[in-house]
Length: 296
Ligand SMILES: *[C@@H]1O[C@H](CO)[C@@H](O)[C@H](O)[C@H]1NC(C)=O
Ligand SMILES: *[C@@H]1O[C@H](CO)[C@@H](O)[C@H](O)[C@H]1NC(C)=O
Image (cartoon, rainbow, N blue to C red; front, side):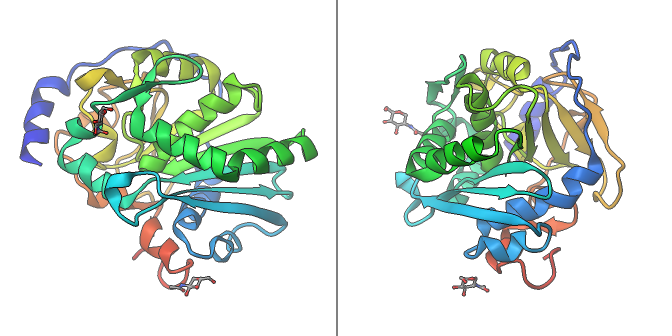
């Protein structure tokens, strides 16, 4: 980790000011109520056990688990689709592989060497593109098309934690550039999303997806990987930063793609802050089908 910190002294202060044209409004109450549990459900053997905690009148479609990375043994990534009638929302959420997260934190440059052209334009990390394509083709496409056809007035919520956040960003961009969602009916929320693609991808993402928030817990290291500018990777908008334990709606919004005023104002980062968002340890809690103490 020492190398990451040292490099940050060189690159951390460099930022690109983006003109804020994001007219959506971030709601702590909305995100806090739903998204930690949605992301825990992507980890759960029984996703419904998790979703039952916050959704009442909902239908769960397929929870897709695919082996999205040959190097990670039996580890899978996953995608989940459901519709909440109370919220008039169709929801898709993603989870990446555990092994890849480890690799990302240990040697960020290896994981980011390969890029793939994305649908709307620009280039993105090949791992994320591959993961999305596998999940999409394994049944999310069918589920989502069906739901959109059946409930054309519903909003579409797209999200993910960690590597799943990057897959969610690709999904949001894909759905809008392919006409399955519009810039005004899609809401994208990610927690601890690493840099996903290059500057061109970020610019296109920002014009396609005005409701796009990357939530960051305090010193979470993952959003700082790979380092700004390394291999051309660049964040999209907008950063929502909680420089605290997320117990209250005490956050700061930074609308530049790369702002020095939110999480980049720290020079030291940690993995511990990556696991817990809004007081929930999403992976452990989810793997227990959302039973026991959400914080551990
Ligand atoms: C990048 O692509 C090359 C050539 O396709 C492949 O051999 C290599 O394993 C890939 N690296 C990663 C980290 O995915
Ligand atoms: C979670 O639910 C699945 C499916 O119902 C079950 O097989 C598994 O044992 C449960 N795991 C835990 C830790 O509760």
